[in-house]
Amino acid sequence: MWVVVAVLGMIAMANLWIIGATQSEIYNDSKNLATHEVGLVLGTSNKKATGEENPFFRGRIDAAVELYKTGKIKYIIVSGDNATKYYNEPLKMQQALMADGVPENVITLDYAGFRTLDSIVRCKEIFGQSDIIIISQGFHCNRALFISNYYDMNAKAFATEKLPLNVSFRVIAREFLARPFAIWDTYFIGTEPKHLGEKEELRRG
Image (cartoon, rainbow, N blue to C red):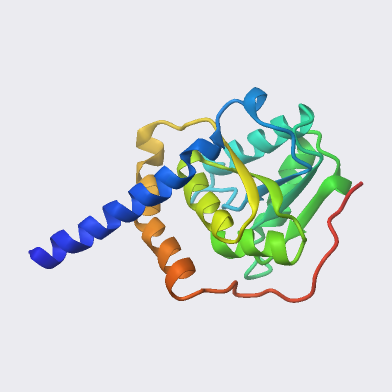
């Protein structure tokens, strides 16, 4: 029982640390967000298991389109998983952005954003971008900002519109457990992205 209590206590402390260190850098209203050249959209599947559109995907696309059309960002990196030829998060994000009026030539695809840490580190090391706006759900932005702060990036975050709890509860619960691993990956074992490779140029129109 004491072991369980200790583990739960460590998870709670990790969450409090990450939220406390990043919450002031997350914006819900684009009017209050300073202009940055680059927005980083973190990947997720475009479809649910049922075949319906994933509301988390749609939220990130809508947020990125809003920032682009209001001039808060000029260029967009879409970073996600492309582990097989049948699953391509960056391509789906690019297609959705273009369908909503974002030009193809301002969208850079990062095919090796296998996890949040990979997307953040590759944004800095591969694409040379440290001054960014991270675009995702608010609860995910906390962890992404924590990682970017560790790597001395000048990042802010723009949170998508909140979804009802009955839709988001499982993902929020998973995020609650993922945050301690972000601390472990950065401060303790120095986890590196699965793939870095050669530096790449950002598409700038």
